[in-house]
Image 1 (cartoon, rainbow, N blue to C red):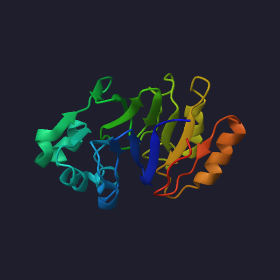
Image 2 (cartoon, rainbow, N blue to C red):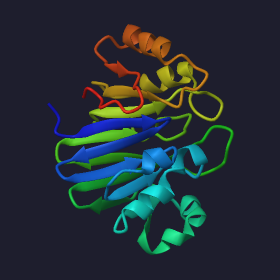
Image 3 (tube, rainbow, N blue to C red):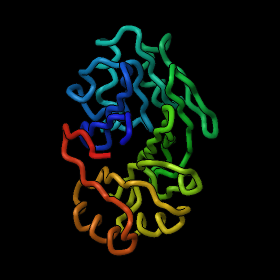
Image 4 (cartoon, rainbow, N blue to C red):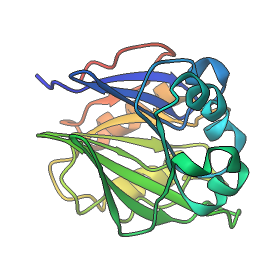
Length: 210
């Protein structure tokens, strides 16, 4: 069983905890950011991925904002605690390692940097909003969060096509950013095509069964 605890905090957001250290990824709103932690990472600048930044940074005066240049410009008040993420680069914070992967945000040209988070033997991938999972498919991962909305992200069919490109065995899949889509139907499609893969539709506040 993994020592990494992953809690879903809504939309595309997650709280990762290992030992006495906690990080957030893409906190959607003030409530999602109202927790104690060490670092917040945001994949891109849209409000539904950055809404919790101010609350988190104000509650945790020593915390780091780790993100790309577009997001950092929106939150200049935290410039002295901001670390810029770049495609292909990595960043270490305590026992955490972050590897950044740029991918296309559908019809929108905003910069999206997905991330692979490692801590010891545990790993968690987060694609952000993207139509392609390239960069993740050749990396051994325990779990990956993927969007299925379509247009600005991969559609359900597009996500299945992207998953076919992954090296085996596939990681556990957590569905995010579905909005008008049916995530349970998507997971049924995943189970049919990839019988050994676990597909999770998370509930807000749920500690994922990883």
